[in-house]
Length: 426
Ligand SMILES: Nc1nc2c(ncn2[C@@H]2O[C@H](COP(=O)(O)OP(=O)(O)OP(=O)(O)O)[C@@H](O)[C@H]2O)c(=O)[nH]1
Ligand SMILES: [Mg+2]
Image (cartoon, rainbow, N blue to C red; front, side, top):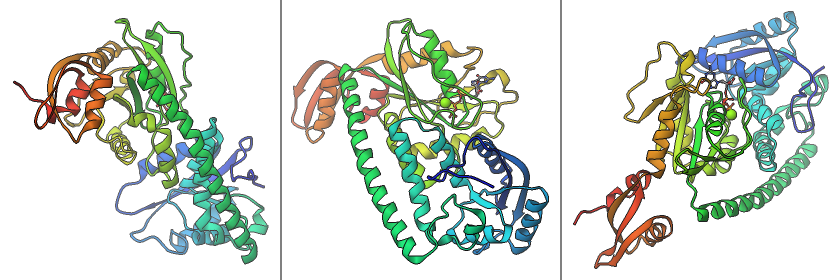
């Protein structure tokens, strides 16, 4: 019998035997299925079979066609599976129908991702965010479970048979969601206080972003080893979502320049919507960073897909137009890498062997610490920019003109790029 925790997590000490199911529409899903397998493994689920159905239009009642449902029921029985994992997000009705027809626990990609996050989150904020995303997932599916409940026992979203009970559950969940939002707001105020303290200290921030398992944490450790500051290394592991909470370390380069390096949670395709929302807060550090290092697994064949997903998530969290370097990592095991023309600056290195790290450091020095003397005319309605220049840059002279304030100041290349439209020469 399967067992789940109160908050719908698969109990980790047990290993489940699962069949994966994917629906193939127009696009090839072999990559997506491979990733689903990785997700299942990350949630301690043993994959014992896989089935893909090509179908233009998903079936409203059961997602896959009725013939496939029968086949899955056979497969599950024959292979003694205790779970079927669907690659697509299922509606409440589909979950119930499939569970009734196949007779084992049905979960989808979203529940799997939420489960991994739930079992790995360690910070107070991370835990709250995951719980909120789980409740958001459960809310519209409360009515979705029928007679199969009693047979399968409690578990993922299975509560709430009677209407009255349903109503109580719904109210209970809403209350809990309100509490979590309030708690999150409190936690986040704390963080923004920390950030403004740091900004006053004027230490630049560099953030590592990228697909899960691309080697962000490994690169962070490599850079930490270069630094003469004593800072703890971060966890790197060959597993999806090894890092869940944003980690920060202070790094001092040989030149004496110091910056904060931020390691972040990895991205994955089709992140559950609630998680994107949760990410926005966790990744606020990324929005305030001076430079992003987009880490790409160069040994992975379809890295363009992962690059696209990362760029899309960056857009969604409001960091799409940040100064960015694309770092192709794992060059020690990458053969036949083809790099698409993107117009962005690419670097090639290996966090493992250290090859290419010097170039990266040189690039960070140049982008974050090199300054140029620039003349700017800031219009009077951009007081925000004027105060930024006064607080953050080394202003050489400042004069009030008819149309705005004229600054002669030293800018990093990132700021220079950003403020280009205000630049003029005498
Ligand atoms: N061969 C090789 N392996 C690497 C390299 N960099 C990282 N790895 C391995 O790749 C795996 C993932 O590395 P992590 O640093 O944990 O990846 P991450 O991007 O932080 O992953 P998440 O935290 O899950 O998003 C680990 O097993 C690393 O040892 C590299 O340059 N070469
Ligand atoms: Mg990591």
